Amino acid sequence: MEKRCSEYESGACKQVMLPVQDSLELLSGKWKIPIIIALMHGVKRFSDLSREIPKITDRMLSKELRDLEMNQLVSRHVYDTFPVTVEYTMTEYGRSLRPVIGALAEWGMNHRQRIMQD
Image 1 (cartoon, rainbow, N blue to C red):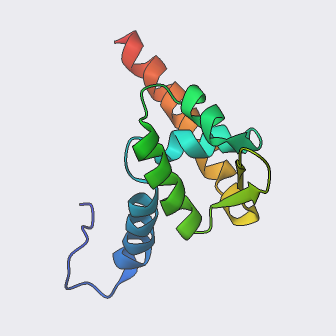
Image 2: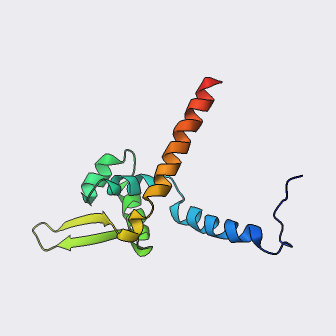
Image 3: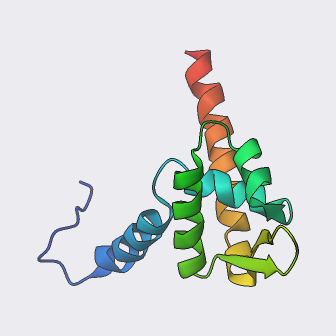
């Protein structure tokens, strides 16, 4: 019989569950992972990101970028040009998500193949 997590257990499940919940909370939503994937392919201006991520509104892109910046995954650089140039890059910490994104992509491709075969 499979052991289930309960609030009464010693914490073995919580040692896994809580960090996973934290990760999912940080990366949740429709847009964060596409933004991260786009930035993993290089430095982008706001307009570049807006073009690369179909259907995202400027307001939502701005909100998500602020959230990713607050969580130290994305860095924002403002250049004193006319008009002002703003570029976004992944931080070193943000780049640590590369294996996670790769694992999600691999799992997603395998899942898609499995479902399409049925």
